[in-house]
Length: 487
Picture 1 (cartoon, rainbow, N blue to C red):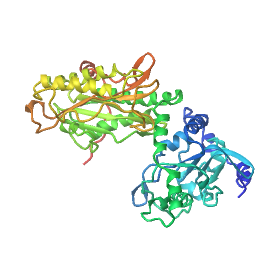
Picture 2: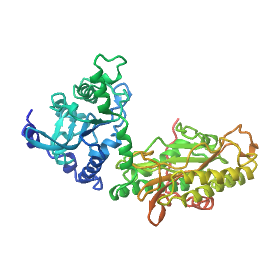
Picture 3: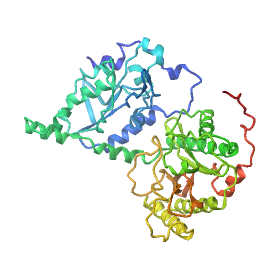
């Protein structure tokens, strides 16, 4: 295969990309220049004489011949902008030369296929990868097997270890085959042999292959958000905050958990958010004490119950993570308010510590100290030094392309976006007075670290107990939304 022919696109007829054809697609996607710049930043962090290899996410089967809606691997999207499956990208530290052409990156994509595109829509193909994504060197995935690259010449081949959850299909250029071919080219299976026949080759290969370093490099890149990322992330957070506010106005005790979930997700779609960033958590009463409760099938929230709503919109790949806990009837009971205000106090104190240079573990320690003292003062625990399970999780994690975005978790730096989410959960049967049972409260906000201090990006969602009760008195646009009763 002649690389010049691929670059010139002589083997392919030029088809304008779907993005260019459709005037009505959003215009605020990340640009190809953003992804190119991210690759340049990655290249700066790579060791000498190395190559970093990234694979697209596998297609996940839902049932029978139906797959889940495809979602790209965040690292792959971050570096390429490519949203389709069955692809891989190689990013080299130094320039490479093949067929007298110099390059430092190459992408392999799924091939254009007229019949397949009748079912699933237009593919970018090689020309699209060049024109729309800005890759000067691009191939079809089927070309990787004959691709003329000697991996043994690199001191380091960096990639994340395989999870072995990729299905083989009838397509001989699918992700399964790309991975299989890559493993053969780098002698991946050799390093897993207990008794290698060639110790020298085994040792050289094991030294060359590195499945750990790349994770730390990508964490360093992704934990600091660029200006372009902050625009999208801020929008995702604000969409999610509006969803919380609209749900406060629409809430009534006869609502189901599923209906409450639907109100949030309708708001997301109304604003053009493509997905939820993670499975929506909507737990009423004792269900709110289950940290990652996703059944959301309680048919009647109940008049005196709280409902904990932990949801986030995903907008153009970036996801928010916002939690509010509200009383179904619009008024906190005395016990609910005491616990809520304690969580709020802990959150406020923790947010104040979101300053450049502060250890990222500090807000958690601050919140935990306040909550432990508060629980002791209320008689829920005997002493603030008691061990308990009423606050079983940490308070702070990065958000971005993942709801738990990668990071090194050392100190706060400018343009990080990190959650602050203290909580208290007192499930039924807990070793305390029964009046506290079934109270599960989490307040979670998304905080931007700036030179001037922390900025709460999700402040549009009322947060104090008084503000929540006031919001729940407001009329809802859904008050008159009535559907026919079905048997």
